Image (cartoon, rainbow, N blue to C red; front, top):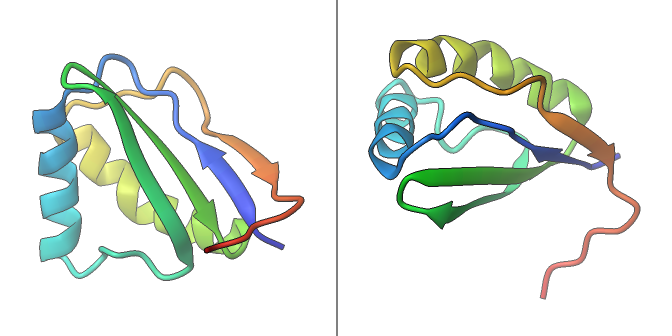
Length: 92
């Protein structure tokens, strides 16, 4: 079952977001296996991210790769990401 994930970062700016994305790409971890959709939104100094994953297990596996990169760039989450079972997921 697909899951929706909403990250709750503390004041992440676009530069930090780009640094994480670059590191993940360079290490071969972007795009992550099982991530069906990734959305970055917000203002330049307050980035938010939401994703849809094929499964909770794939999301958790990617988290093990993501966490060290977040720490390296000084990004702290305000808590655990919110994870919801997707009731319906359509693409058009």
